[in-house]
Image 1: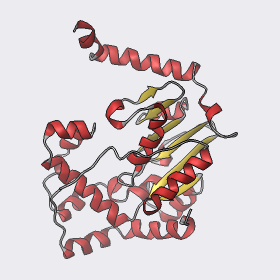
Image 2 (image 1 turned 30 degrees about the vertical axis):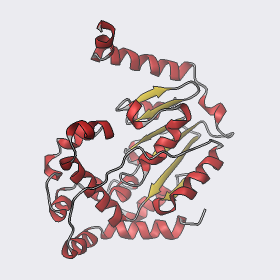
Image 3 (image 1 turned 180 degrees about the vertical axis):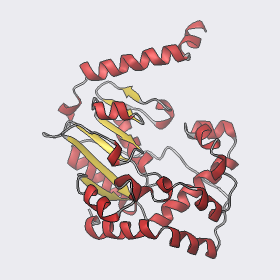
Image 4 (image 1 turned 120 degrees about the horizontal axis):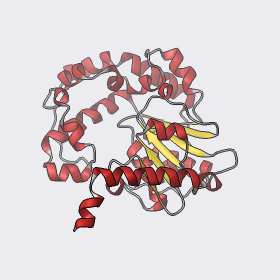
Length: 269
């Protein structure tokens, strides 16, 4: 009981995290599991674009899941090390696979980092984000914490909870309203975003998900198997036709960017 209490303490977690950082840097040779010229893989994770499902496929290489890693920024398996959410650890580069919501322009990735991202229709992505926040207000707290490690953090974002779709949109920051464009341009400039996207090794689309995972597996020579770890079912929300039109008007820069990306990168893999 005393050991269990110590393991849950902040002191133990900090020590354990430092130990994992040390082991990842000195005892893990992640690049030997990847094709020549690739030392690590980084996922530019755009919110509500099936990114968590892709993450699960990589984490599953060592038997990890969202439920098992919770909010940990670094975790190590028998063969590979993984990083998430920490800019410092992502830039450090000691991992097989890392992902986060950081925009591209905030990161300083090491050479030989294979990068990829996944896009989604902007309106569908926004509706999915709205559904996500509606779910937060409707799910039992115990179940919410079990299904999503970010539940308590989301619960604190009162400005986005219990809102109509229009009010939800009006309370979103540009970072989340135009998340795909913002990921590649801080100033939301489409030309700049298109130019920066050219630095990404692979660009995928949520509506071509299965083929995208298959292509990732072949490109990286990894056996990736997706597990659907979260299911937000029976969420009650309403969107009127007026709100839909309002959303499409607000999303015009994101829609324009998405069309360019779609024209340039979409293919039946």
